[in-house]
Image (cartoon, rainbow, N blue to C red):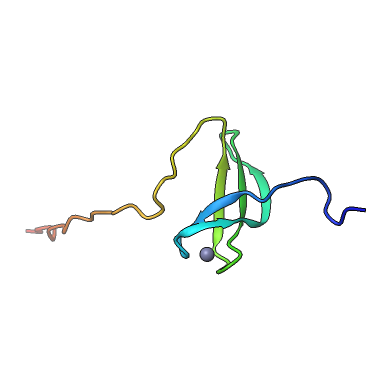
Length: 79
Ligand SMILES: [Zn+2]
């Protein structure tokens, strides 16, 4: 008897909170709009939602937080 149905090895994802690779727990497979498959789950340590894209293409891990350089906008001179 097998408690779990199917052989589904836990995918690994990068937890931005733990800043480490973690096994994705409660992972569910989802298909995105563009047809790509992805696994959405949680970090076993902190519970942060993790998302791993399963694509045919090897996509490099994109940094979660890009340095959004917001230029100090000048106040609109209304005259
Ligand atoms: Zn974590």
